[in-house]
Length: 292
Image (cartoon, rainbow, N blue to C red; front, side, top):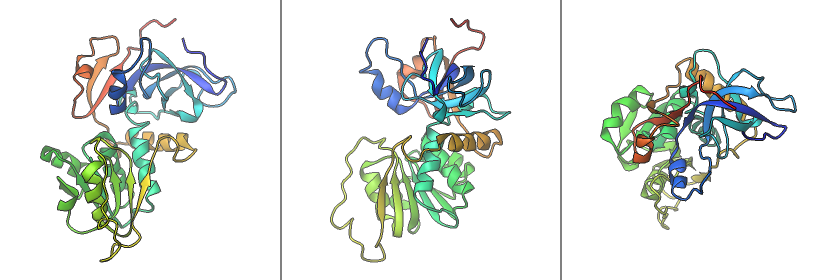
C-alpha cells in the first residue's frame, strides 16, 4: 500500500492506460518496479491536507510511475473528477494523451480560422489533437498518417484532409502538432507559413531531426517560423482544469476515445507483451477485488 504525502489521495485503480513510454521502460525495469502513468478509479482516501476529491469520488489522473497497481498515491494537482456518463476505461486514456494534445495546440497560439497540421495523427495524441483542432475552430485540419487505412477514421474525427506525408498537403499551414520527429518534422517545418509554429510533442520515429541551412531560410514567405519544445506536465500549472475539460468533452461524446483492447492487470498480458495495437490498450482491475 502506498504511503501518500499530505497533498496526495489514495486511489483504488479500476483502469490504467498503456503508453509507448511504458513499453520502453519495461525492458530495463528493476524487480518490483511499478510502471504506468495514466489511471482512473475511485478515491479510497482523500488527501490529508483537505484538498482535492473526497473519498468515494470517481477520478482520473496522472502519476510519474505507479499507475499499474491496485492502489496508487496521486497528487491532487494531477487528479480530476469524472463526469457522469464517462466510464473509467475511457477516462484512463485521457490524462496524458488528451491533455498533451490540448496544451500543444494552446502553446501554438489561436487556431480559430487557421490551418492546422497534425503528424502521427493515427496515434493517441495525434487523434486527440485532430479532434481538438476541429473543436477549436480550425479552418482546416490536415492529418498526416502513414497508414492509408486510417483515413476514414481521421475524417470522422474532424480532419478535412488526410495525407501520408507532410509534403503531400495542399498549401502551407499555420500550426503543426508534430508527434513523429526525424524527417517528418523537417518536412512539416517546410510546410509552415510565415509566422507559423511547430510544436514538437513526440518523437515516435526515434530518428534524429536535421534542419539544413536551406530549411532554416526565411525567404519566399517563410519568415518568422518557430519550433517549440513540449513536456508534460510542465506546460502550465493548472492540470486539473485541463483534465476535467477533456473529461467533460469525452462524456459529452464531443471527444472520442478509442479503447482497442482490455486486459486484466493480473492476466497473462499477452497483447501488452506483443507491443503493438491500433488504439489504446487498457489494463483493468475489477471493482470487486479485495484490497488490503
